[in-house]
Image (cartoon, rainbow, N blue to C red; front, side, top):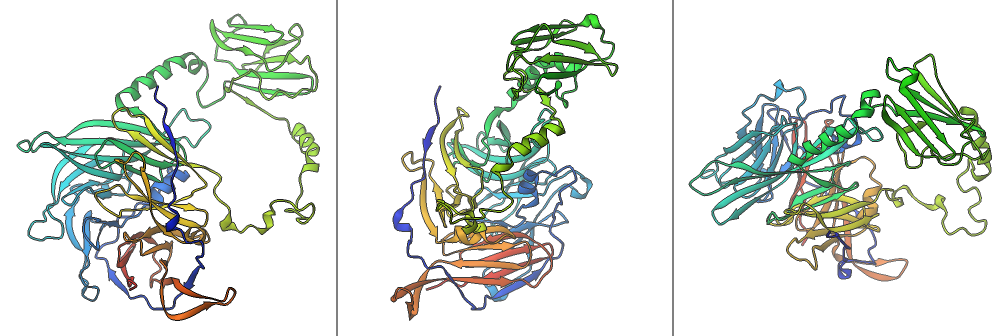
Length: 590
């Protein structure tokens, strides 16, 4: 069995600036242009049954503004009338209205459980589109931006099950066979999940192909599914279609679609006996303990008699059989007095088993070694006694005497933005043929920040926090020795962004000249790369001349509508609210 290679991200030291002195607030005005939309953005609010954090990450924080990375300064959104609207900017002072390029064939208002419509620009002439109802469209667009050749035409249109959003797609041309591979994200109910949220995240990798030029029909040739318990921060298919890369808090594993159904049948068969007696939403048994004994309570099926029950006690073992079927068997955590242990059927149709401990005072962490099917019910008096025993280890004050004994770390000196998330994300590369993990990078405390397309022919880049900086990484699936290349650094941005508690979207220019983030309402923050000073400036503390300064700028939008979309190009920032599209001219520094 092949084991995934444990890799690491290699930082390029020349791209770091250890003497970076911070961002200087600039009051230079930022030209801002506002366009009123003919129809509101087709925003879909979360339903009552979409209550988990994963639903919020995937759908509640969805970016409704889409940037066409194949063409400069071209953005798209979908409005309430089902129209895909495009704004392409040539000259800021001569902005036109967004133009309709395509209209969805379905009436979206007729669907109650739909998701937001999503779009991805697969290539310079192809687009993948979802209407949010579970239908996938492949659209040949011609050369977008060229009125003579641009014509959006549906080449594939099929229902693929539950609603999904598109997170990535690529176009492949091998010999005369044209294929499009796309990644679809769903959050689905998991009935058997008792400990988690009750949902799982599904990533479906769908490949649609046309065998030759003469055959115009596109068909699905491959469908693979990955499952995980958290929405991926980043997921993209490699340009050659041979692999997939995912950054996520919890790992994903491949479950082929055909195998998924069979495995579920096997699981159902193995649990058939227990499910026949007990609903799967409840523990199989409940148990309590005192210093002297343990009590096990089991709810019995209706019409169960004494003859249907067999309980065998041994000094360190218990075996319970109901109606000829083994119910609970295993080694006890510690020894019991098996001759004094008893069982009785209670009036409420439950079986009560009493086990007498041989070692009085010993607290059992579990009843049967390795068994997780029961639930321990702790008595309130026991909780109070434990709390009293632990009282000397706690204090209501946070480090009341930090100087005593010179502790190595004083939590009172930490700021909120110094504290990393407790969870540890990982970057995984999956092979498209074997469906197994080939490379794993443990990201540790390197917090994921955002992704950006620098070169549309390559995979999207992702930005991670490294110490106080934000580092941009470009995946290269063809380079085994340097699969992830450090291509740019935004100095101190990892630290700065952590203080923005209301941030909603994060982006940077494809040429790395600036990074920007926006809050839920109005404010946009721009952080430029250091540029040479036109005047002489000295550092007063060190007495040396400062050669470069990094500027921070703040723009405030004249609207009370929430921001629902945010995209950055080399010269402009596009900000979408429910009824307006704002364009901020980000002047490039010479």
